[in-house]
Picture 1 (cartoon, rainbow, N blue to C red):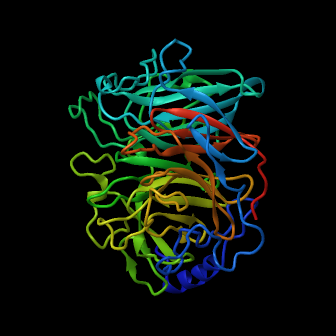
Picture 2 (cartoon, rainbow, N blue to C red):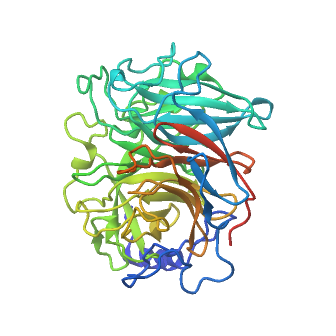
Length: 484
């Protein structure tokens, strides 16, 4: 049932005042390098936001790495867990390349299990190190992508890696489920016969890191739709799944899947669903005056609150028309490069990485919070256009995110120029955690790959993250402390 204007006014007043949090992300306002309002030309974007109280957030400046890989603050160290072309799977094949979305799970005997996506699009012959076609775990033998399961001992000295799923394409982000599995998402719309594929792609698959027998004979969860999937989160109370789409021309959509009546989530249950089970819907947003909002880039101040109605998708399997093209202008609300998501504080944190010519208003990154109880979206972080991406200090292009056990968000940068892991605190300030110093370009034209898959170990002591190219998983340890 649509919200009335009076209902929305009540809910937006509460949401705009901030969300009560439990040691998690906090109320994120504008940040250095961000625009809660327009910054004057020439503003130093590396200093704390005006009015910020207390000591500067974070752990101090980054120190160049003599090995030329990862710059970290003083007192922090890193360890390479997997590296394409260097480390191998249990079967002896190379670790697949292009690491992306990652989740951690408690493993046997004190170990940590990490499920790691590999964003490899198209046919296997295109890639030197595709995901191996492990017996019984292959969806489409023509496709190069998939994910691996990495097991790390408590002290980090022993690492094993095996295939979790193979024969999928462009496995970008994904999401951890409350029942202890991983949902890996294909960021493609390739159908059988296109780009060498023998099956349709653009689906979500479930992987059980504890029991790979449960992943045998992989089946797409067609009820969640076929489109350029990015990330997914699960509402553990209501059973809804929220999914992002990284696409343009036109810009992509946020989706909500409502399970059919009587359905109960659990390991392997999603793959039993019929392709039309439940309801897949896209958002229709409006402001406090009841005016329709066509694109999330319209919001130019943090704290902006939009009400949300959900409009059912006509053909979720996109047999003839991409899902995002099935809606006319004025029906739903779009956003450019909808990327990472994380469920915390009773709702979903959602990233729109940047907006350019495809969007009404330009920006270099947004983080929204969807509150399912109030049915509102609140803008938490807004990054202004980075004037010089080659200069260290400012951040742009947020992608994968996680909520830190030490407060605030940890964000992987996928922008232009220099690439960082950075944090955003409860009062809206940002700080660097790591910088990728591995130049995969040339001395004349340096290029640095994006960070992906930041996630803490189950005990909160280790931050795992990836450098996508060539494919490096890192474990970062240090004097973590509460960020206030």
